[in-house]
Amino acid sequence: PFRWRPDQQWEGYLFILPSLLGFGVFVFIAVVASFGISFLDWGLTGPRGFVAIDNYRQLLRDPVFWKAFRNTAFYIITIVPLQLALGLTIAVALNQAIRARSAFRMIYFLPVVTTIVAGAIVFRLILAKNGPLNDIIKWFSSASGLAFPAPNWLGSTQFSKWSGVMLTLWKNTG
Image (cartoon, rainbow, N blue to C red; front, side, top):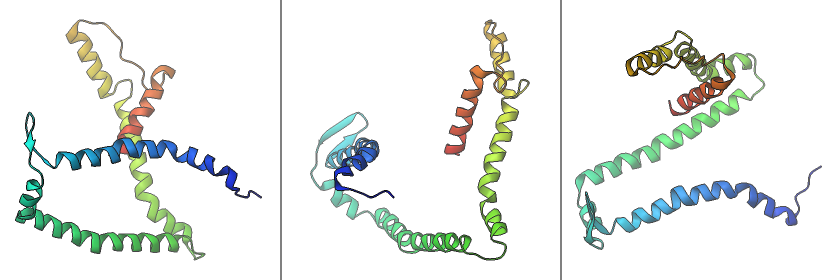
């Protein structure tokens, strides 16, 4: 069996290095920059001057800020723990040896699977040889005077990979 040894610790750090770099670039640097900008009077064209903590004084006097703060605190105190408890309860229940466990799992995961299948069907219709995407390409071709054929999105090895990329992007942003 595999045993962890202290001399292998560097491998673990190597595996998390890309995530740490991404966090550093996209989160940590942005937070530090935002904190620095919060001490400036900022206009549409850029910074107009250093105002120290005047922005924070003005913020603490704003009733809209306090209303948003109370709403956020309410959700943090109530909704987040309830969602975590409910999710954990459902996960534990779906892993218990009970009668009809497969049926419960199917009912629970059906909405997830259904949206993926629905997206695939919609994209298959859009990317068909006589689908709306090729109609747009044909119209653009005739309107611009350029003669290029509408691609076979799903039947060509050249374009089928990009069709999968479009479906994946739509699925992950929807």
